[in-house]
Length: 515
Image (cartoon, rainbow, N blue to C red; front, side, top):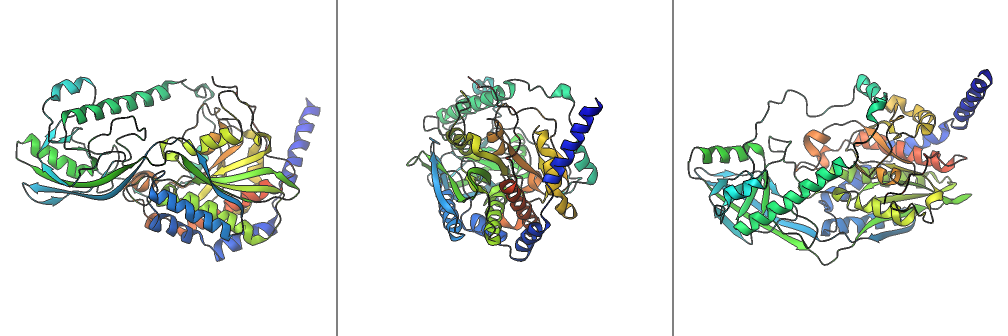
């Protein structure tokens, strides 16, 4: 036992010595990131100029073209839009207005949901409250919805706000995130979550068909979270060209929705008006990821990857979801190029499409380049990837990184984080965590799903869940320049170290195929 303890101690000391930070490079990265930053310029183009970026929409394609030009401008190699698919049809919104005309005039705050139909001009009519929570509700309202504006949810109880909308992690919260979960809870609940998602999607499809068959003029709802004019909403219909297209569907701020519902309940006549111009885009059903490389030197066949998703929802410009993550990745490779330091391994940036519909772009990419999950048949680059780093949690500064059960990475990352402790990046989380049974959350899980080292950074929440995530307020103004500079410096530093360390990053055991 004593000999084993000595071996482990020596091994630990050797690992720590191998990961000693090169403070000269840290200093140069910080200087470039903080004194010559271009991260907000990247974000301006991605959000103000080209947002929103619903997958395969004109904004998404224009943003991708811009990224290609910018990466080539930094003298990166092999820059391209790499096709995957099929994705299905895209959708474009070009006009929206909503009004209450009676009993008094009021402009309505809301946004149409993706893949719902156009009104084909201005339409007006009386609203009817018809909560459709289960298939049993269809019989209750059959024959009663033709040419009506249908409210499909009951009135929402709006709670008083008693906490700030924006916050950073406290020291106590960061410490709690470092703690391992109860091992008894590491076993996943099997396919239950997937089955629930599939059941929700199947019901939505049936409800859309019912509303179409009944001749609903416009459908109104609200989002589970959000009020005060902040509307969180995504899709009503489907990218599948064979699925029913729902009637024009709008998510309203709940205060406006509730007023309409109360007037209906009091049998006071209400008249609403909408003008929604949208279009299904089925001309190109394949999508793409944007990739580019800084070629390596002595180990150029080995890879280090970084990225985030380029696509967004349509209610705003996708600034913090995920313009910030894309901008930080672009800035990180710009910083590395500006250092003019040869990198041993090739660095590859990837900005994904289709993330908002289920990590589609990154899942397609890892199965094309690395391994098929159903068979674990290895692709040409499976044994060449050292690590993938992902940024997709809003504008918050990096407070650390998650290792997703890869406890071998913990001492390495703790060493790399040390020069950034003064900027708040201190924690390594997820040392004991369950394996990835299916991709979820964000794109690094597409890598861990096939047994590759994929890592996501821990970020301050700021307003992500309270104001910007999938909302109509996700604009450039909600991004914090200092946070993005810090994030770009840390991401560049992690990529640099991964490219230069003697060995590739340690891996967990290869997962079994999923038939």
